[in-house]
Image (cartoon, rainbow, N blue to C red; front, side):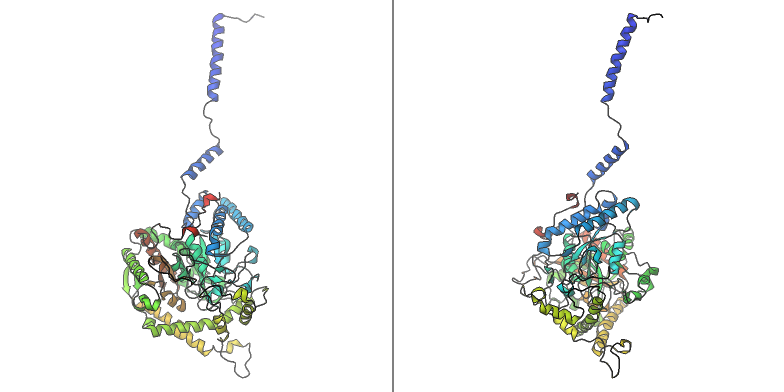
Length: 620
């Protein structure tokens, strides 16, 4: 076997090759490694997150939050945690929230909705967003919350299930995280402090400690003003959505009676009660309204639901599917960028509507009203002075309000006792209006405390209702259960004509005579009360503020007015024409933003000590 050849030159070349290979190996080992696919994805996520600007939860819109959720910047779990923490930060002083759902339950719901989003996308624009409900709106016991109207009388009572509007919210993927405070029994028990209830105690404006947040949906208004949830609901019989919206610098919508089912809502009046959104933005209110609307085909006039929903005309019902108010506003915005109110005719009021003595407000409210009219004109609207027949003079107007009181007192007992009859359990044993009065008398330390000047804690409304029969007296031999043959109490029947029918006809006549889509007026006045009596839709949008020179009355609670208190502009429209009302209100909101007026200048005016600081990124 021949020996290998060992040439001197070839050995040297082999050595050089070995050295070169070693150097190359070292160089290659220090080169940048090609990332794996998952690393590329992670880098993309980090780059996206680093450039993402998180929404401020005080002002965050539904669109802002859904963009963040859809982009993977945060989760519904993060949102729930952040809003719960914001509530905990401020509730000792503001008292906006009466009760929270069990934390573990809402986190579990949020996790499931996050997983569903990842797998199949969002159910609706409300998917995975937290909701606060006024404590007169029923939520199924499985969610761990009471429905009490702020009274211990109904504590631990068991409702038969979600109110239909709450079922709609759950079906849309919303998460009910708690109940807001309210004036006890929706401010219709007697003389008492607005914003106070036995279970919740006092609630306060975020603009002035001890300030009046207004009317029965006080907690909902406060919660919206400082961003305690993106979706908030209140209810109104007369003013309880519009007034908190005005006095807390936010948006409130009271729909036509019958657009939203009232079944499962603790009642005052079958002819005036309704539920609506109280939120930061008009478009958000429209989106929520779309969700909670009860299409006619869903009720069929069933007495177990709300017969008023069966009265919806085809124009409002859209073949049983209801109108998509949010999408309508979005589409309008695309075509009316420069002049959002181009071609719109708006009725404007004066006289008694702006009379400071009659309404009990200052010139600040009147000034804000006229600045609002200027914004409407700059937005392209044509303003038309209108008169309403029912507002000829103070006597005629006062007569309409007196008739309204008769209607409310008469309808209260029947409605309240009917609601309680559906409860599967009432631990207090109170199932009649008389029993509710007696419970309070037997537990005055709970239900009737006198805790501040101006808080009489009386039951005058309940007592008056007990003396206001719904039906006429029985005729000889007539059965006590034969209601179909019994006429209405004559006083009540006359009040329905003198109040509701007369006011409704007056509004319709003005809208038709002057060819206007809506009528606007100061929210601190009585325009929205006319809409309440007539069952027409109304809403309020921020328009301005009281001056800093206002001197609050010392020693009273709640305080009204106070320095820098918000005021709003109210809109009313024809029955079932929420679409026009929302369109005009959105146009006004756009102009307020464009002009930097009425709280749309980016300045935070709520008090620093009660404005929560927790943001989404703080809980991630």
